[in-house]
Amino acid sequence: MLNNSETNFADLNRMSCNTETQLQILTPTQPIRLRTRLIGVDPNNSVILALGNDKQWIAAKDFIRQGQGVIVRIINSDDPEASILAFRSKIKTLVNHTGRWLIIEYPSELQSVALRQHSRIPIFVAASMHRETDDGYESTSISNGYLQDISIKGGGYTGISLEDCQPGQRYYIQVKINNALETLAVPITIKNIQPPSDDSAQYQYGFSIEEANTNVEEFVQKVIINHLFQQQKNQVT
Image (tube, rainbow, N blue to C red; front, side, top):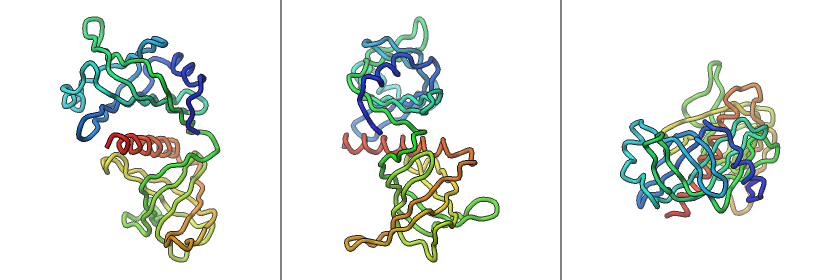
């Protein structure tokens, strides 16, 4: 679950160097998202990130300046809970003489998501259902809707009725990440079905995720990050 406990700050302070990090720069139009890595943390003072040099970083150079608002998400895959630490802050300064570093103000608040917990995390992410084939899944969707919650074990999907669907049937669920720049899908098994309520025409499907699939953790992680990105975007706009 999301929380702001002191434990989160302790986790941030001891975060390992080179931990994967995502930086979102808050611009007046569309937020800019950049990949980087953690250099280190100076507790209660600053968070130090590596300055990138790929085309995305070059395109964002005019916004990488002192006082610029940012959102930082640190992906701590070494943690047994595979947590994401996220916070809103500002750029303090850039350092180039000792290394290509971006210095971020130490956060006053933190959000944390534990990816491997069994309890489901409430989300709202557009998704679609697809029929399974011998070598994957059909590209044409048979139902469009959204993920309403997710965990490493399974989740809940709400959308257009799946024709002749029964518990135990297998499908693929697909999510388009970051404005359709990336598409992810995992095999699922339907566990339960709830028909539409009086004020809705959509069905609710509980599902489990195929545990043996190597893409499960990546799928869940990116779906949650996509949800957090969208939340922050809505807050900004």
